[in-house]
Length: 324
View 1 (spheres, one colour):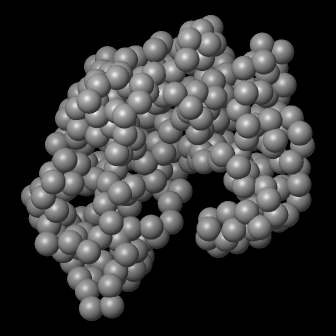
View 2 (view 1 turned 90 degrees about the horizontal axis):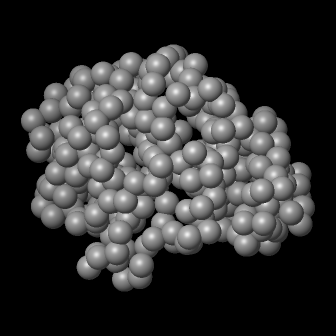
């Protein structure tokens, strides 16, 4: 099966993450038949600074087989860079696609994942981050129902009935670290239109809710559901499993991810062609090249991790091992 991969890169930390993503794809799935597009926002009134990557990064990425995909930012920009993943879809060629957050390593053959691109899904590696319910309401049910009603969607058919009413996992909620569909144009147009609608005219039930940085994750389940998709089934288990690792930050990678992910990171970081570029990333220099990642890893039992990510972050910060 051939399909396109999409990730985002702009000036700063994402440049190094994009290099690791591209290099990990070549390392772990050399037979991948699709194209890895790295989308790059272009300068414009929505950006306070030039968001384009450096020429050095551009050269490394193209050497790894990446196609650089420029796109215009009209709705979001500096105030909400998460919106890049929404707006970049309009620039992607019309073919099935898998979006990946740039802070992802390909740890196994994506080519073997059994996608049904007509039924979109997204990452379930999420926590109870939104909405935050006030004591006197509205409830979780009322909050999510207002969004489904706004876009004329069947709310009840999205429930996970193994969880009780007003428990957060009953409702369709994703991490936007990966998602896919057969049409970037159709999916992207709806994602953008609905995200802007929620941002500019939120339902009354959302008045007390923070929309940033959660807007993409608020809108994504609505879009997935509207195209007949939903929670990923067992065929997609390699995502956030044997095929991909959405590590978020290097300290978190060392704290909680698999031995395979750590081994791959260190192999790529010490590659003779990549090391001269990656050593400019302070987090990688400290965690990998100076060995602080091993200290972070020793703090945690991967078989018995703290229940919430914030607890891991707090421990790393207390030990002076939190760096981005």
